[in-house]
Length: 62
Image (cartoon, rainbow, N blue to C red):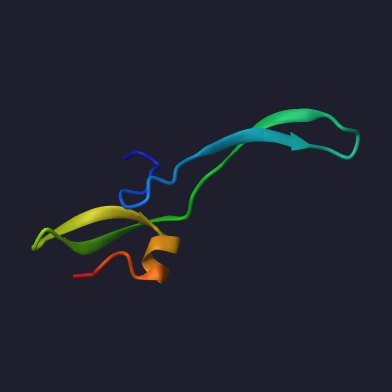
């Protein structure tokens, strides 16, 4: 399962964690993804959706 929302395409973002002493270490920010049953093209499917799409009503849950 890819860490990408199937509705908006939101995915993993990479960057640096910066400490108080200005040391940069690599890290990644993961989207808040949920597996939900939704109606897609008239059929029920289990899709991976971010919570932003769920809250905004872009997904019709089955």
